[in-house]
View (cartoon, rainbow, N blue to C red):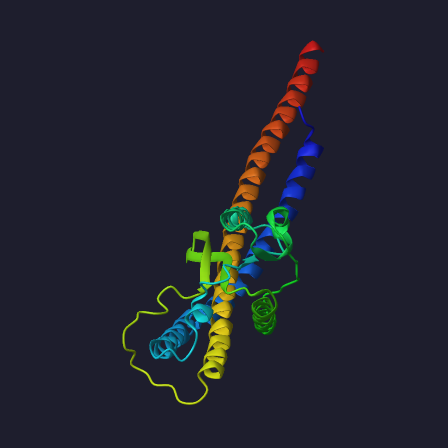
Amino acid sequence: MESLKVIRNRIKTIGSIMKATNTMKMVATVKLSRVHHENKHSRQCAEMLQNMLVLSMNECLYEERIPHDHWLGQTTGRTLILVLSTNQGFCGPFNQLITKKASELVNENPGAYVEVFGKKGNSIKQNSEKSITVERTYASQDTRKFTSLLVRLITEYITKFGVWNIHVVSGEYKNAITQKASSNQIFPIEQTYSGTTPYVEIEGNDVNFLEELFTSYLKRMLNALIMEHLVAELSARVITMDNSVKNARDMSDNLGTLYNRLRQDKITQELTEIVSSTECV
């Protein structure tokens, strides 16, 4: 049986842990509120640019003013997989979901180029032909820098390695208690060419216009995926920290009950000894 001192020290330790996890929960909640607000219209803007790119490509492809294979991504078959994991833990099974989804996509695309971002994605490297790890934070300005880094990386793969099939594995926010990992094909766009007469007209250099529009689409779509990934990650961390606080509180309550019972038993034992000694006299 543990002594009262040991139980008292355990209660104190659990109290310190509860304070730390509660602080982490509040920090994640504040970050989640800010990122969730920034993410509110990111996906809508990305989808608008995607529709503009689709209509513009349809117009050029319909009139055969640009090569079909180049913009439809049908020739090389080269694939680039970008995996967004996390730099921190304490977010439940979220990292495992990302790792599982990324590994499945890597196995489905043998020989694909794989770039992994975040320290918690180290296990994916075993299935990767090439991968890197970068530091990320949740500040909005760093999110923009990270988006620009991804755009430069994709452009480099397109120009140097002939990559034209691009997938992003990231977290997806479903609701306050549910997050999952998703794989998004950001190019080629599935509904790119319908073969019908489009409703737009493009004047000037078609290729330059499409490249600029494609770059803008990449920036917005990647930024939207990054923001949603951060929302899902922070939401998972809030839930994990909340559960940790509840578990710590339950453990503290149980130990408190045990402490009081042992203390009362000790008092009863001492009183019994006093009464017994008095009766003997």
